[in-house]
Length: 383
Image (cartoon, rainbow, N blue to C red; front, top):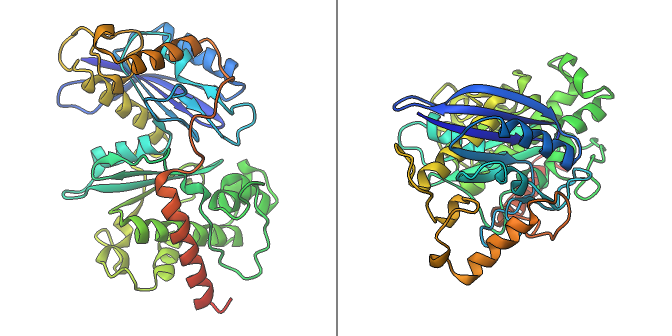
């Protein structure tokens, strides 16, 4: 039996757990805890302290972003240009890797659950999946050809332009940098401000509230973009806002309306489990999608390090991020310098360089596709 530690870092809460993988069985969670997201030093110290009291064979971390995923970068494992106050340029993996010398996996808090959803719940023949979380923020994780999508950095689908339902919708958005983006317009923060209620009170809004109608149309526009640009075979919607189950049929209807018959496929055109009801779906893992995604990252790191079924000596595979355990003689001077910089930086939390561009490779194309959909939708409605 192999034990994994998983950390799901969110803007509001950090979820940490220990999971166990048994031969022929899915990973099960043995123990979990939640910490409120405060300052980097407070939060990461609490997580590291909890982990230090437990044994595990690999660590997976799924983190809000943007983050640096470039293994050759001195700031791999850092949060970079996040709008989360106080968390810009924060070294996340350094303190967590310092707890125990094990293989480590690191990705976004949406790529990781996308991987989990694809790996365990994909239908036969499927090779792609999108995971969209709609909560305090909005993020999009992508698996294409069975692998998480990475480019310049990673997808930032919450920051593509959105398409509004009503010509009179003058809501200015809650993001000063990108007030026109889907996150600024229909995240939980934005919806609460639209409705004039607290985020906790959103669930009490009636199903026919104009706020839900507006949100469903904007999320439908996002789904239409994913369908048109990436041709993903399944779109999974999760996060706190999507606990409002009445949103799903509204989002499906909006997606179909916006695509307007252009994508001629039964998953879009037909109803039912083999149609759009099975194409745009809730997460099987529910609110545990992120932490199970982090467990999937830990499992991958462990297997890449060559430790499956045995307690072998640590591998020197750089991609598994095994801190301080490798054949120093076999490493290039460049890799050795990168690792030394990581070790030196593990004591600090928030000082460093922005190691990655703001937009992911997939986002560049997505922005263009979303703009085209927005223009086309506006023309169809005479705006």
